[in-house]
Length: 131
Image 1 (cartoon, rainbow, N blue to C red):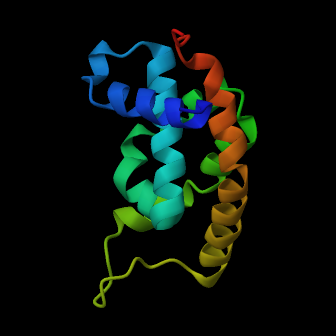
Image 2 (image 1 turned 45 degrees about the vertical axis):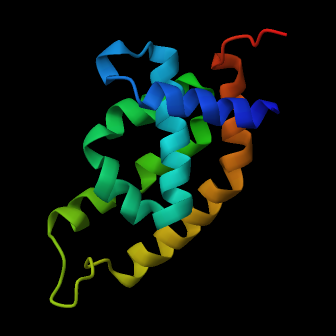
C-alpha cells in the first residue's frame, strides 16, 4: 500500500469515529480529505451545501495542514453560504449570478489542481506504519 492509499485508509477509519473522539490531527485529515473529495465530486457549491456549517473548523484544518492557499480559496467562496441559504429556484437550481458562477468555476479548478499537494501535506499527520 502506498502513502496515499494509507492516507485514504486512515481518513476513512477516522471519519467513522464520533467527532468527539478524534484528535485535532485526525480531524484535520478528515476535513481536508472530505473537502477535496466534495469539491472534486460536486464542486464548491455542493461542498458548501453539505459542509457550510462546519467551515470555520474546516478552514482551520487546512491552515493546520499548511495548505493556506486552499483555505483562502474556501474563504473566497463564502458567498455560496448566502446563495444556498436562499434555496433553490423553481427549476431546482441555486441562484448564482454569472460572476459568482465564473468565480466558482475558477476556484473549483484551482482547488482541483491543489488536491495532490493537499493530500501530500496530510502524510505527516498519519501514524507510522509497522513493517
